[in-house]
Length: 325
Image (cartoon, rainbow, N blue to C red):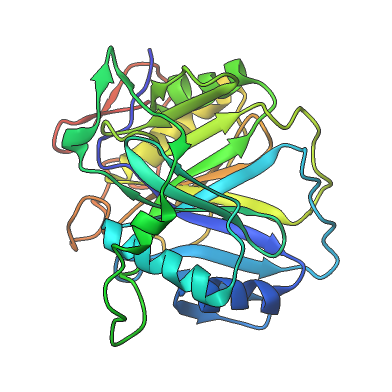
């Protein structure tokens, strides 16, 4: 039976390994304007739009080899701004800093600016158009790649705000270089439970929950080469889900499909399930206090931390919501 994830599922965090933490931190804080929420000698975390949320974590390993550009791993992660004028203000920061932009596209569903951080990690800055402007047919969302008029966007930037900052972004999606589309679709769609929302781009697929255009994009454009162990770039990426039962159901199903899992020891009431995706990356799944639009925190599961016996039928939450199992 094919699984599916609840509509409230969203991308919560990206964790990158860097060889030069000070340089990376300067880029994300001074050029992009992200706020530091937590810092140690070897790591730094940046806050997002949701209170208490950490959307980006950087960990330093000065001996980490550089990830080759044409290898499996991160293509880009995307910072999503709540409104067009916030994106315009973020672009204004780039202009004032003299930081190079790699590209800018109008995707129909969104407007996006592309750049790379100092170690070559792709970063997208974007704002969605209203969902009423999106066009769907047979479960597929229409997306385009047209040039974005940056002068027109810049005209939407407000007069310099007193703080000098746009409203903080959240994480909209992540896009990965993968080795094989079929194995990747099996993982994200059949096992994890995301819908395929776009498959018309050659060599690429897009996955989402809740009729979003995409939370995860994948492509085979970089070939099949694996990066060196412990190289710079992606360490893990996290999906936040509204109910904790999902973690236990996924953990129970993973061995049936030969996916490696482990539980990360965090707060006992809010654990993180890590699942090795088919391309060697760690996907984390966590029940979030804010993903469902409530401050009540994750609901207690009926499993009391115990994984149920192997089964293929859907699980039911305490409110009778079907989730993957």
